Amino acid sequence: MEFDSNEIQRILPHRYPFLLVDRITECVPGQMAKGIKCVSANEMQFLGHFPQKHIMPGVLILEALAQTGAVALLTEEENKGKIVLFGGVKSARFKRQVVPGDVLELNCEIITRKGPVGIGKAVALVAGKTAVTAELTFAIDGES
Image (cartoon, rainbow, N blue to C red; front, side, top):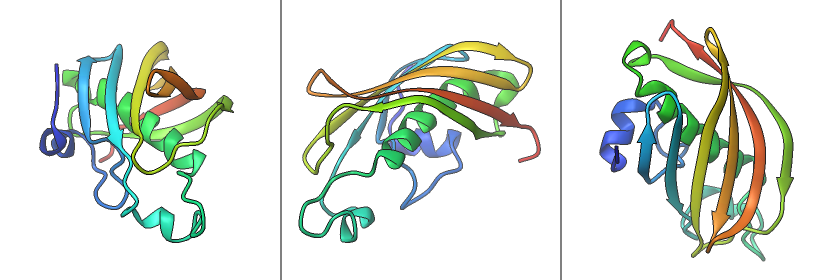
């Protein structure tokens, strides 16, 4: 499965300036999703992070990875229309700076699930090189 930005907005509740996935390039519902985010100097965060040297904040890269994982969970029939919340971040490692002009390749594989809670193994790449790795905990909220 692939999704463009309009289709992603039908799956995720996020909107500008907080929708951080431009395209889903691959998705297996409930198991994994891959996407991309094209980083642009026109984004709000670069007004203050940092005006003299634009660097995408690590927390926003984690959020982009979480949104990618949320697409994998919310494309399952039983989760359509729900919201996926952050439950935690473990072992986050920032290995290179992400700057305007970069294309973030976002990968999130759901490695365990128990009821509405799941854990995803997440990796963000730029030009095939690892930028961020983390283990993300998700909680599916049925009261959307």
